[in-house]
Image 1: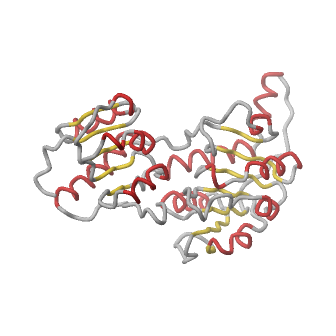
Image 2: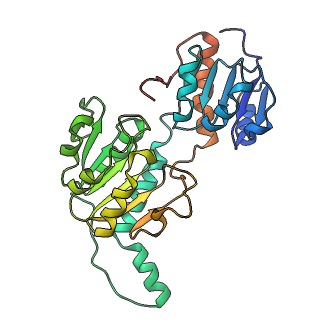
Image 3: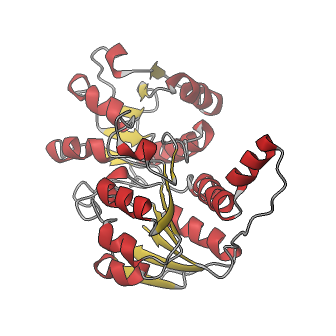
Length: 314
């Protein structure tokens, strides 16, 4: 793979111009910035740094493609293409989302448990009424998915004084997590949990995993936060749990269909908080760090980091 230093690199992403500016500042070279798949003509680029949906939409015009570096953590749209084109390499983005996800998750937990939304309403009404609040210290958090993001969340959770239980494919022990279970024992893992945080990828094993049985196993007054993939949650079961009051609140950043349709019941479900898939937007500088490290490996003929297994889905 040596001798490819001068090969044009395609950047196919809504933020392509920003990414290319960062690349050119760090490694001058030949880059082609394309902000949408419909703007792309046929290309013989061997390397593409791009968002999965955009790359998939342009795949028939990228016949020379050999390596895709995803700009997103989720790569599910590209898995069928990866299975069709066995010579194609796909690498993901890891190790950069943990701090952003932690800010999001613990920001929401603090806002909900310390009743910050209620105090904001009281301020608008000029009302002074202290509320009965709940501290997170000593409570139990279950993290579904113990990759780099899940491990970072676990470390922050322990700093808040929470007991941390993890669920992973293997169930093998992980440093910094109090207990860990395999996916096959997930109902045992979530029993009496105060916080259920999903950072699961979209795979056949994780779809619909957060269903009525799992939600019923949580502690009274529990909070669900999904920052992984929307397919993990059975929508109707979540609505029922919130309407019945068995679940205190849910925070969703990801959905089965995005943008979330205006007619979806989530918009009007009590105590359900929606954000538009923004919990951990990839910083261009961090993305370029990952890409340039892999580019150096590519040019040296070395194995690339974070290579995606099309059968496992991550």
